[in-house]
Image 1 (tube, one colour):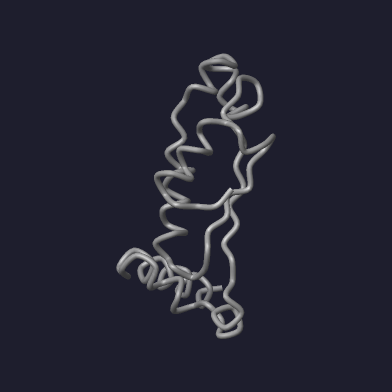
Image 2: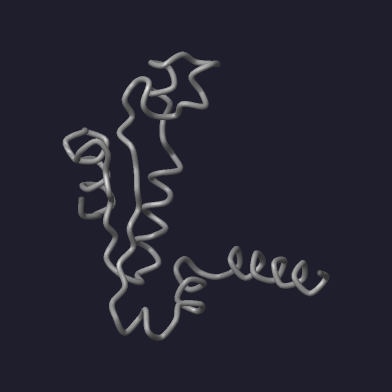
Length: 111
């Protein structure tokens, strides 16, 4: 058990101290690098009642949907910065939402 705790602490330290993307490349398998792996990120359109459902009791459906999604943007930027393969944003219900178009424009992901 102590070995596991030590290893997790070491991995967290390596993650925070490494330049963006270097940590992922260091632990990526050779087969993934040779195969040209693809990074797939799944996201739901910020529509009232459909997204951020845990916030609905506190903010209501409209308030929860209007909450900015910083984690999605940060996730997409981290995936793109890692440069381990092309980043694809898998959207639900479809790709027509302005949020997804903005992600495509600003981060350069494919939809």
